[in-house]
Length: 448
Image 1 (cartoon, rainbow, N blue to C red):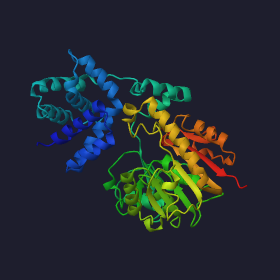
Image 2 (image 1 turned 180 degrees about the horizontal axis):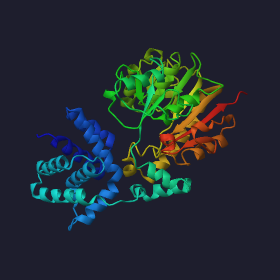
Image 3 (image 1 turned 60 degrees about the vertical axis):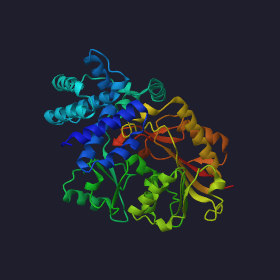
Image 4 (image 1 turned 90 degrees about the horizontal axis):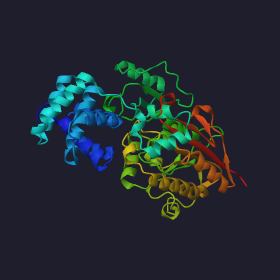
């Protein structure tokens, strides 16, 4: 197979599965990328797919306007390939001759030699005229876009625009291996640029932001656990738990109720290695990733009380086991399953898959987790509820309803570094300080 053909074919196959067959982008990457030996090819496939999913409305409109006869269902693979071609020319700005030649050759390799001429003509038109602009809001399904406008009438346009662009790369320095300044110097030594003058919020002492993305293999000492990739908004979870009066003390018992893939659990253990941490996730395969994450950063897997593949709300399945004898926790973290509407810029296929019924089910699950886990918290302990959602039904509204039915739950207001006030918590919107959309609410259990 000639140079450049394999990644174009792989990108087209991934996009066809995601756009036309309802598949998850993450799942498709997991099967497609390992088949490519060259890491540059894997990076190209990822870049093409992300660009297409962010700009699919524009590319669909251009294709509809430029072809005399609309492509049918049987042409879905070709449609995906054409979108990949548009992305190479327009979003990635690859050399036109390479993008054109390899994409046309990919059409032939897909068994469509009779359509190779059309592919060539359409890509040359895109090169010549550019792809017409389109409103980024149109990538959102109507019902979800209206909920964003209802919840954030003054910020909706900014939310939708921020969700359509690539996010910066945030790093979390493992303070057990050195501080942020020392790792910043390592980046300088290997020629990785970052904005040293960026004013990071004071609640992110372990964070470095790179405005240009790169593969983790290129980060100094990544495999050795010196640094992890984690958005600043997600890093702030550890800071919210560590606020005075702190419960993140030596040997404190902490529950991470929805732990996979383990980034927040690792961060907590990097901060305080003696924590007696229980990490749960309902998905056993994802829980294995948590163990791998903790091992990579040397976060003291041996110090973790237990990793359980269990429904956190089903207490007899884990809290009554030999290792969990019903001893209450000093802190409970619920990084709840949610609509993920705050991380669309990182997972653009969310907009293809989300349905109104999904939101109803998620809100019910969040309430179930809150009610079930509150009794596991010791009097005087702290529960931190967090989501990567921007929808009030999942966030401020969810916590308001919990407070109304839970008399011993007391709100502890978070400082402004966690975002804007929204009811009993703080909401960060996509793009605020370069971070993802995130909600935080900190609740303390009253002492009788």
